[in-house]
Image (cartoon, rainbow, N blue to C red; front, side):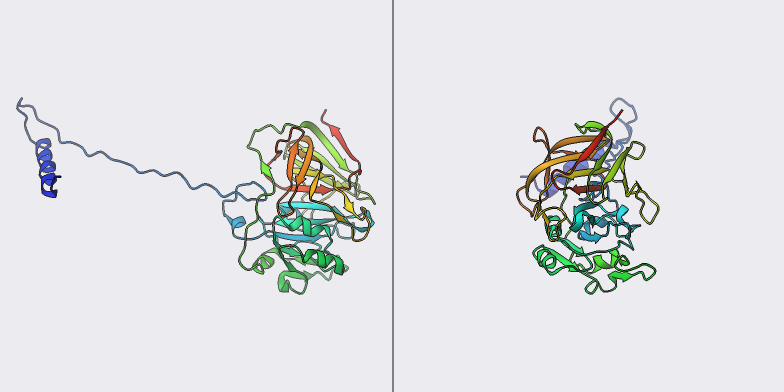
Length: 339
């Protein structure tokens, strides 16, 4: 083995030869120039919000839990606040055949969400995969007993502290609103939610049939129509005979609408009925201006439902907001093909 001195001598000899003023041929030798080596590293990947598949440059979605808020869907509750900023929105059938929303927030934290309404039995199954926070106005004891089984921190008007407020310019019970930043602060150590859907890459085909509009035939006057808008790549929502606009003036328009046909234990529209969200059933996925007919499958309520096409392959959605419609199996859904 060479000693450190030996290595130093050899290096020095090479250096002397390199800088000699003359060679044996009489030609002047040039000084050897040092080789410049630039160190490069791969750029840090941009965070992606789990519930939308969209880039999240601030990483905010990774610093907080999912916040599910029960929201009114009646004429009296219009206009809604904050729903256009939700990551995922579920539309469920409750007593009398009317519908109510469960909106899940993670990427954004609106200062006003609502009107906030009461819990139903279906909600515990909706929130199991995401956990996090569950905001509501109260409810019947059987419904509260049901949500008590879910892995969420409950925030009602009392426990939310200043995370909810009453707008006394509106009539109760349509005047209770949630303040998302303050509710997120009530969550303790946040656990970010897992992804609920798979998302496709830009330009990837949907594998579906081009569709211009469709109507989900909820009963009691709550049928919803969705019209494809190619300019914005969204499905624009209408209810009660016209476009539905949030209080901000923006028409509600998600990138995806998933129709999961389900059974309601006790009967859809019956008080205390609960959507059976484990098992399997038909699913129609509206995305990218197309409809993909297939099934939903959820053997474990702690995990989200898988959306599968007719060949059993996972249906990938467009990154963005997703609405999940939960009509009773047998409710009509009419589809208008693209011209």
